[in-house]
Image 1 (cartoon, helix red, strand yellow):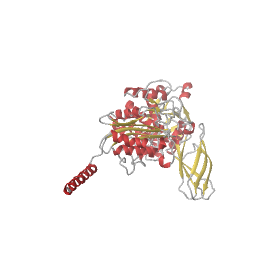
Image 2 (cartoon, helix red, strand yellow; image 1 turned 60 degrees about the horizontal axis):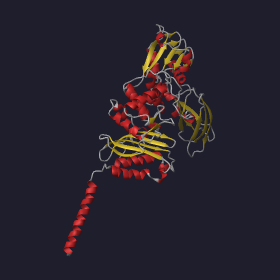
Image 3 (cartoon, one colour; image 1 turned 135 degrees about the vertical axis):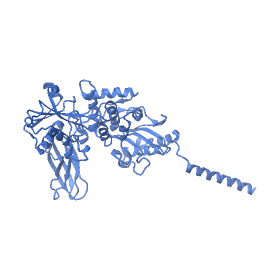
Image 4 (spheres, one colour; image 1 turned 120 degrees about the vertical axis):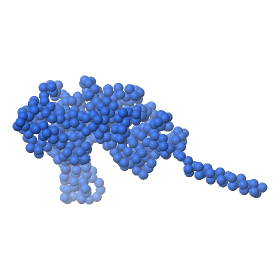
Length: 500
């Protein structure tokens, strides 16, 4: 009897060891039930009692939904809206599309190199006159325009430089951007003639003694915006704190705050008013350095000006031109750092090319609706009204975003679209997220954030080797503390998905 009991115990131990070994060696399960249990536990945490989650996770190859919650509810996407704008631009224009900036005059320069009259700089929305596209070199940002003018044999302009931004019709700001966005770099005005992202980068250096004003260094060097400097150098402890205020219709900024003595300084940016005027102001200075004199001043013309003083390009001569970097590079420069201006310019570009009359932004949104309708994203699934996601009234469903991403995964411009997405722990707005986790180098996704809003949508592969497309949206979330902010909570959800 004792031998029988011992035998049963031995068999039981063997079975338990076998099961333990099986569990250790088993491949991770992609069971929707296990995934749902894990995600439900995260999403139902008490800190989200008054917030709203919208989540959808789909196996990319099979199309099987592995998890969803509120997937058909309209929610604020924040910068996830850029996924839609980039897809539209690539679909309508193609990754090799380039934007042309033209230089018009009454006639080509003669042997003496003189332009008799004005030189009109006619923009069509090229964002690549920027240090961002020139290795961070502010001097090179305007160089393509200078090279084009000098290369055309122009040695002097008897008239002035006219910055013409009339290619886009309508306000310079996106629908439902709030007034306090507009004095920040991320709310820079859109213009058909854009230079240096329509912002001036700033460095605030501490003074030589405590209490002395801080110095303000502009990059690029310019006096286009003047500063009322009310800053001071603080004790050599603590953190810098700078506040900027630039009225929307002025190129004067008031600055308050402090920078600790002996510190390396503080960086910020201020948007410019009248971007087309900013462009030709900097161009005139750069031309002077090359010995090309402009006798007249600089001025700008917009769509309202052209209603009373129409521009007939057919009666002018294009003496030079510059073409932008390919659209694929612009899309990458938009999605990786989440650049609002570039996204809005892409929407306006599509609107201007559509042939629709009236407000260019409305034309772009109309083209977006046509595009989305063609891939099965109906009006009940989106309410997008500008290009960047800065709008407080924009709405989409997680299902719509998953459908868009799935479509673009098979699109002819798939490579340009996928390569433009930030990579977890590697670059873009995800460079400091997911480090040391299975999501690092795995998640390719677009971030989004506004007050009370965090989103992340894109692609990843789970531990079972299943390729996934997903959209995670968290709205109306009041963060209880820094350790439970929206981005951290979304990252927990991503890592839980990958584990399955």
